[in-house]
Image (cartoon, rainbow over all chains, first blue to last red):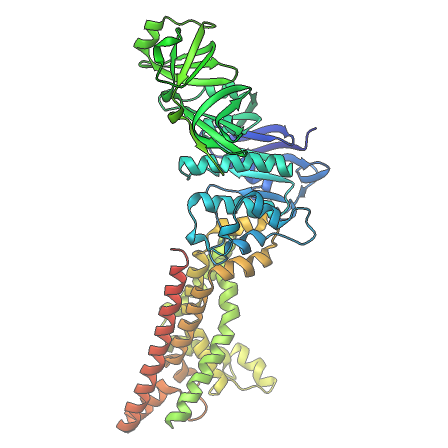
Length: 342
Length: 222
């Protein structure tokens, strides 16, 4: 079911924003470089920027229609907006921030949000007393408490450290499932997109391209930087996690809760024989699906029951003499598996 | 004479400040929040003009406008209202001279509020009016208070425009600065000392409170 239809046209000095897309109940990503028009799309949807022409509707509610001169003010659109900075109101404590847009007749309960986001201990603190990750959690809680029809996320993790990023990603997934609120997530970070989004739209110089899968997106990642394999998983009170039924050994016991597992592409090895890396406690059998070359590094995309991305040196790749669809062993240590608990 | 001037000074400064507050708010909102650049430009000039003109010139302008032969004075005289050389004239003179200081400080206070906070408030369902009172004003509260106090302190010390427009009439327009001027001219050194002491104490109290407000305003964002 399509929840939101968006057609936009806005002129800028260096490009014309032109997009036409629909979103559903899931998490939709808009991925592209800085200055490509990602945030402008969100500003148009939320009503802070008026496109020259277009049509935006949510279910049966028309937010903007240039033909019929309909333009709903931002406060009437019922859209939650989370930005790069947490933008908490400095003179209000956490609870007052969360309750700012809340009304008693809303379906959503403030206490439920507080429990879901696990922020009970932060309620009487002021924004200046919060860490970046905590502040962003409150910002998301505040947007949720206004009972939005849709949540817009404009690079909400870009100013956070890795641990905080993982924590927030975990919560966003939780929110989408628990409150069934569609999310449009904008970022230039491929790892976030792959970990979180169900559908991803690429944007380039104001033009929104067709939807692509997370696998295609990961193939387009910058080979000169580490790729973070991120998986949203459910713990089971053990030192093992399951990804599509495949067991992964980790270094700590994970409770029965949602967690994010992260594994850097440079922390994984590959072999065409099983026995050479006995020191590693995770050895997964799979098939080599894609190869991406650069001068010194080769990025390999493997299917081991789930997609995993790893980097090896060109010399080692030549030594292995690997070809597409070859049977391979993917090897990594449990200590290199990063687990983020809520 | 000292007590009378002290009470009159405070009374005139308070009323002048009360007149200025809504005007300073409106002009500050226009300067900091309007997207109409020409309006912003014109209002900005009107705010700054009294700051750069000598107070005597401002007093002279008021005299031209409000004298019985002046544009507005004619109408007021026909209605039986006399403005020139009254307490109201002293209040108007103080208002005009202190207005730019108050407005400038409030503009700075409003400018210090992150526009993104206002954007977020609107996305959370606030109308522009609710957003102004719950976010803009709340977040700039100490800066705004400091601006009001600065205007009040300037009104306490007003001299040039008052003496031209309201005269130097005991019990009517003889505020502390004018009383000091009078006492110096008559060689009343005892009164001069007393009046200057009053002036210094009032000024110091205002500046101390203003500094406390500014430090509170800065601390909030740390």
